[in-house]
Image 1 (spheres, rainbow, N blue to C red):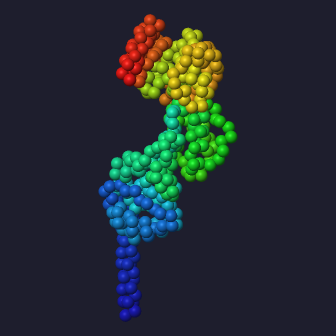
Image 2 (image 1 turned 90 degrees about the horizontal axis):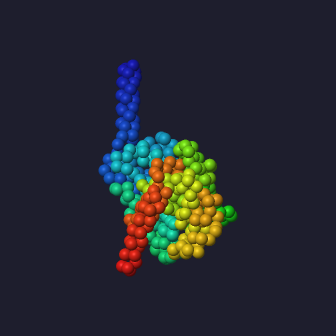
Length: 385
């Protein structure tokens, strides 16, 4: 009898172990397999929340099939106590495993509200944006120009939310002074900038920042990125360029940046300046004259005067030979690459063509015809005002 009971108990135990193993394997499959979510969502994890609340929220939004499996697996992986507050993008079909990883990894929000500070050549614009999970595009909620317009209520409201993300975007062609002054105007940053970074040494790009971050640390990141770009561009330069150092390349790139906003023109503009340098001609480019007047501290806000075109400054390329002693702005990557890989042309002149681009010429006679056309366009525009 006891032998029979022992045999039955062993059978039940084995069956139970098989069943438990099957349940575990099924749970693992559910945890790792594609989830039921059909449209991406933005999951809000509030400070002080826990996996139970998060799993219920996910179940309510149709993102997971089982809150119990979600919680048990997070506990088993020792991730429940690593839950981060923030806004997290949950993509369609995301597995429970992927969701757990996303909400316990770095704590950096991947959706929700973003405040972007766009530092441009003429002004700094602040935009409050919301990521649309369905399209993965940002919808603008509010926008204002710093120093010219009052901040809207939406800005103050989102500034007060813990999961709001912040981004600084630098336009190509801004000066170091403009960047530093814009950073000073951002109330979310800390730290005094004791020294103005060298002109040209801050990389135009997009930078994610956090409230309380030191301005000097952000500038250091911009400098590090620009130095990397300079080194890479110089390493890949064409042979035979009239440039003796990375510093001269940076100066030329800054002039290219200020002369054209058309990506397809950068190689042609670079070729004009390279051809002029090779022929011993003065560069004769207006942006260098403007820099000699403003020293990069803001915009000129008017046309150049004849007296300014004739005035000797270290940057006035109508007066000096060769390149100016420093860059006149912070060039982007494309202008750095154009400086070391210009188009192969015989152009030595260019002038605005009325479309936002330029008309290029190999001879003075051809250039004068292009200038005459531009003057006609200007006259027509002025008469229409």
